Picture 1 (spheres, rainbow, N blue to C red):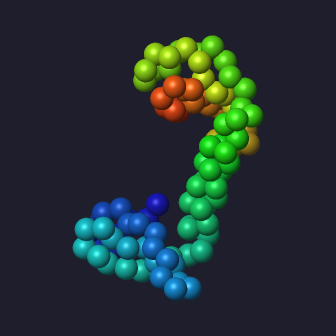
Picture 2: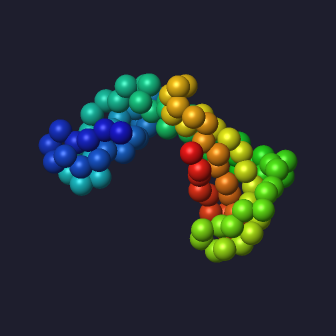
Length: 103
């Protein structure tokens, strides 16, 4: 996450041609972005897409959805923090697709 040097607002990653920029959504200030900062966001999107595609093979469990109170959810685990942190169990409601986690 990057913040604007001029107004302090959160900036968005923008790709124009072969260059990557951070662009302020408030004052339109732009600055060149480091590749590593944008790469992480791309990897998160790809991981989310893999979870969506894997829905047909994800196991289900009797779990009450906090959003719609349906009683069946897909589940999987992820290492969401540093390696020394416990694994996080994630759930997605079969009915409304709401996703929540339990550490």
